[in-house]
Amino acid sequence: MREALLASSTPMAPEAQPCLSVVMPCFNEAATVTEIVARVLASPYTADLVIVDDGSTDGTRERLDEISDPRVRVILQSHNQGKGAALRRGFAEATAEFVIVQDADLEYDPVDYGLMLQPLLAGDADVVFGSRFQSGRPRRVLYFWHSVGNRLLTLLSNMFTDLNLTDMETCFKAFRREVVQGLDLQESRFGIEPEMTAKVAAGGWRVWEVGISYSGRTYAEGKKINWRDGVAAARCIVKYGVTSRLAGRG
Image 1: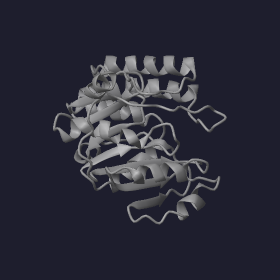
Image 2: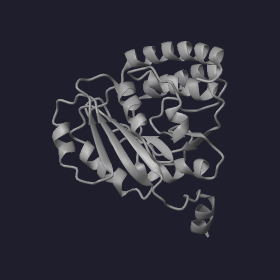
Image 3: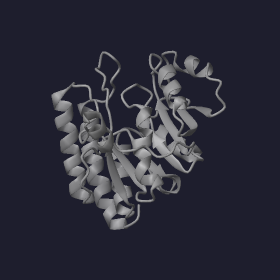
Image 4: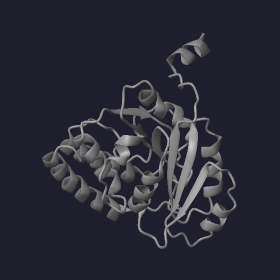
C-alpha cells in the first residue's frame, strides 16, 4: 500500500524522446567531465550536447578529445571568458526543440531532465527552472551561508521581476529554443543567471519551476563561485531588472 501511494504521488516523466540540446559550459573540470558527459548522453532526451570549453588548462581538453559520440560538439574558447560567454556561444549552436543548461561537474543530475521537460512538452511553459529548494528529492547538505545567499538573491530578483521563484541561481534552466536564442544576453560571468531571469520575465514568457535533486560540491572538490560573484549577481539583478522592465521585451 505504501509503495502504491508513493508511486501515485510521484510525477510521471514524459515519454522519452531526443528533444534536448544540452549546453555545457566547461572550465577546468578534468576530474568530472568524462562522467557527466556519459550521464548526459545516457539520457533518452538528449538530442545533442554542445560543450563550450572556456580555456581549460587542467587536462579537460584532453578528456574532451576522447569523446567520439556524434551527438557531441566541442567548441574551444581561446581563453577563459566566463560562464556567461560560454553559454552565449552554446545557445547559438543549439538545434533541438528545447535547450537546457548543464554544468560540467556532478552537482546536477541529467536523470532530472524528464522532470524539467514535463511543463515544456505539455505546452504549459516556455521556460522551466529547476529548484534545489522546493524538492522532496535528495540534496546534499553543505554550506548554510551559501543557501542564505541564494535565497536572498532570489528574493531580490523576484522583487524586480515579479516572479515567485525559489531558486533563481539554479544551473538547471530549460527553454524552448526560440526563447533562449531570442534573448539578447550580455553578461560574461555568473551574472548571466539574473540577466536571463530578468529578460525572461520582461518578455512575458510562461515560467514554471520544478523540484530537482542536488549534489553540491565543496571548494576542495572544485566549487568556483564565491561571495564576489554574489555581489556581482546583485548588481546584475538591479541593472537588468530595471532596464528589462523599461524595455518591455528583453
